[in-house]
Image (cartoon, rainbow, N blue to C red):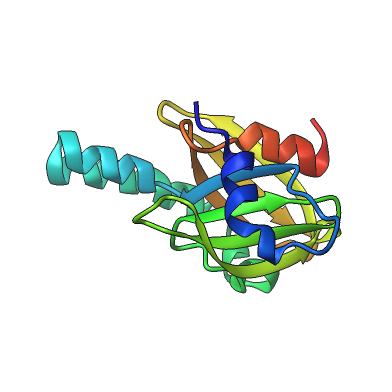
Length: 158
């Protein structure tokens, strides 16, 4: 099984401060992306529309919280790698070719994240990240390659 922490540690050591270490990491995708990918593979357009409808409901439930504050500064419409260190949360772009973290996109202080909610779905975990300014982002975390619960536990506890 893929260990996301090992994958991130190996790829991003140059982005860490001296002595800083990745303690948790996960791959995230825009809400509904995994369902759309599966839908395209098995059911074509109809399945794609159903998957998109569920993601749309999740985004609408944010009531615009994804369009303001900290959330608006992050590139949440593409796959990303998130990493937690004792001091920071780091955000990297995702290399489609190699599947590993690529370029550092953002860094946040840990206290800028006020909560992480994880819900198990059929093929993914839905992960809602709430920020200290009341903005929020909703992601899909693949069950293979991601670690939503490990990310949440490292960041905010159980």
